[in-house]
Length: 299
Image (cartoon, one colour):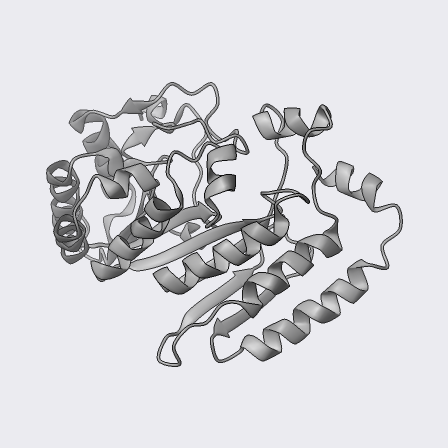
């Protein structure tokens, strides 16, 4: 057993709970987003072929037939060259008889370094689903949170994934622009969603994590977060301005642990019902007393 391959935190999307987590990198190559502390203190490292192969060998020895889905970790496994990723995918097909597909987080800079043809080749080899934390479509906010890309690049990331025929699960963060930038964030994010047309769309609520620059800004009084009702009003504005063709089917979810209200819908067909549910939620959340204390406890 080689536990050193998993000696630092490993994160994965909730939907990958039953997947074999195959670590290709350790940490995050960017690791500068002001709202995130997932890999702070974890030096970025690309694992060697030997380290990757021994993880695969462990899973094979444990139960090769049980492996159907594989999630590539850590924060930006796609920093690996297309050639190396193809070799890994080829090995997965050879070792696991019931292997169906692989998925990965999609760091924006990693996607921009790959052409649509490369992404299509990876999809045909089994990498079928990418999770992309766009966070916002607003260029001002992207710069403030140090995402590493501007608004045009953030849209291009999603469009490349869709053009390659991959499934795209895209996430936005409610409240990421604070009170001051809320409307701009909402409107620009809706525009980006319309331009990308993701397969799945998730909306989570901002959480100020210990050790992040954004939490430090909050503690200095330089960032004012939205109230629970304010977060839902921001979501309402986003959904109101999402205009997808009737032929599109985008699964929307806001069922992350950070969300005050769990919501689900298929856009565009459920748009009016979703807006009704959001409006009802706003009314209920406005009934909360002492929201400042509630909010601080949450963050």
